[in-house]
Amino acid sequence: MQKEHNLSKNQKIIFDLIDKSGGPMKAYSILFNVQKKGIKAPLQVYRALDKLVEIGKIHKIESRNAFIACQNSSCQISKATAFSICESCENVSEISNSKLSKYLSNFSDNSGMKYSKYNLEFFGLCKKCKSK
Amino acid sequence: MQKEHNLSKNQKIIFDLIDKSGGPMKAYSILFNVQKKGIKAPLQVYRALDKLVEIGKIHKIESRNAFIACQNSSCQISKATAFSICESCENVSEISNSKLSKYLSNFSDNSGMKYSKYNLEFFGLCKKCKSK
DNA sequence: AACGTTATGTAATAATATAACATTTATAAG
DNA sequence: CTTATAAATGTTATATTATTACATAACGTT
Image (tube, rainbow over all chains, first blue to last red; front, side, top):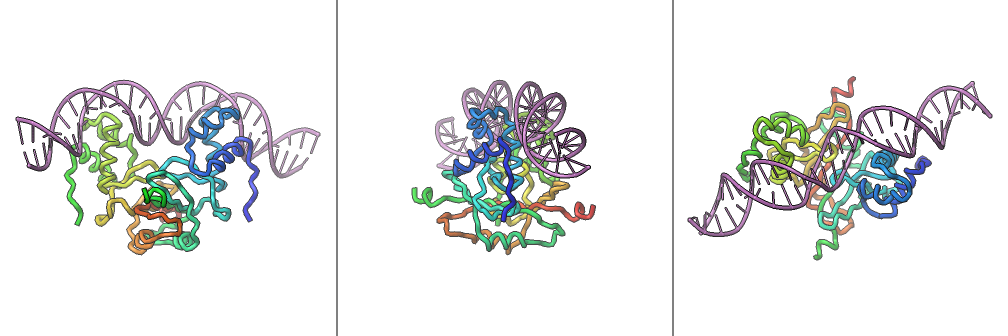
């Protein structure tokens, strides 16, 4: 059971927008879209994004500087994320593969480092773009 | 056997700097450091970085917007990269683990997507920082 | 030498993200 | 219910990261 986070006003506006979009959104595109709701400054957006990332409601796609709603209800608060990214149409989806996440969460090498988090991004061509 | 790439003047200056630094470097820090060598504009740096990434001499650490020299002589031209990042001291090193790279290079799911590339970033505390 | 390709130089600007400070709202303890 | 504290907001300015556009030069082939 996931802890219930009561989102604040700005957080809710921004989460709903990203969630409804169904894909990754960039910060300034979010800003543009929520200006009619009274959110006027970049910092207001980034603060909400930071919080949403922290509580695992969204993830940042690092290679794209974009944010996507968590598609995985059992997501362990962004400690273990994997995405597939189409390099042609830029479609992104979150990979939920328990074998993969188990493999990576248990990964260790001889560096003496304790890994507490990972982010994996796969790139390629999606079904649609492949057949073009 | 890796294809020999003859680096151009700017590419060589910038690669040597990153390589000698031994760690990740950010673009504008690189710019600052090469101004005495006549490289004055961001674009000159980014162009060299783009090319160096393309030929696999350096990699971009996406979560840090930084660039690091490839530490893996057999690196398959940046198609398969993995890094460990200390969240305290920001030390970064490239992970060369053939089991891991084999596992990820062969990964596929039922999305119909063909993965041709991946980038993995592990986060945690390095040996030194753990013991503080 | 002529051609195409790659690299360079330069200026301007776009896109992404944070610092600093003042104020307000929510939460919890007494 | 009130006081203390933490969390969120509002606002302005600025820092950081990256690209567009255009002109010129160097390199590698035939």
